[in-house]
Length: 205
Image 1 (cartoon, rainbow, N blue to C red):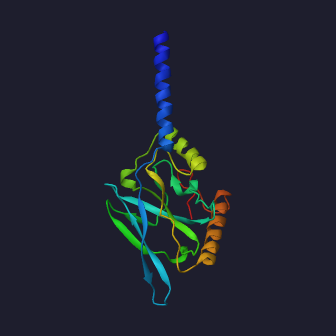
Image 2: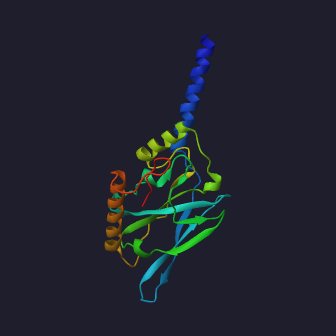
Image 3: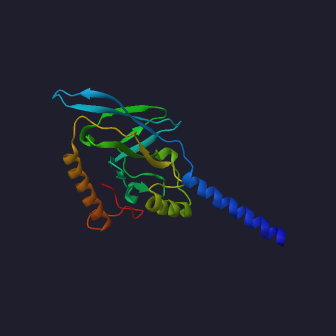
């Protein structure tokens, strides 16, 4: 009897340790870098941003608000639970799909900031490689997004570029856009707009 109890404690300890490692152990991710400065026809300069998918499967991603750093203060982009379909383990709405081991470049545009900042995206596997998951994993991932900002059991997480500054500042335009997005999310959460789908999930903006 004592031997069975001891064995049970050992198994439980191993499970707890494995879950703890999933929270803190670094995992492979998508790469974001600012490649080069590009001069537009109006004379303004923008960074060319490159997003690379290093995995042997396709991914999809959506942009999150840029994060800024002023002195020791750093802003953090929130991963809103409405962005993720926890049943399938994928994004509900994405900006672009990246095939296996491919890259995509774009000009920074409205996210340009003269302050120290970095680009942020939320990415996941595409629908073809994301299967329905056990309900307990769905619940754990919902809780993890709220507590630590990313799921634990999904290949769905946040990727960030290195810190950099831009020669063109479009902070005012971007902050207005971000306010509109936050207001829209608040309306969805409050049930004032967007009807739930067949799973009871409201559509993201």
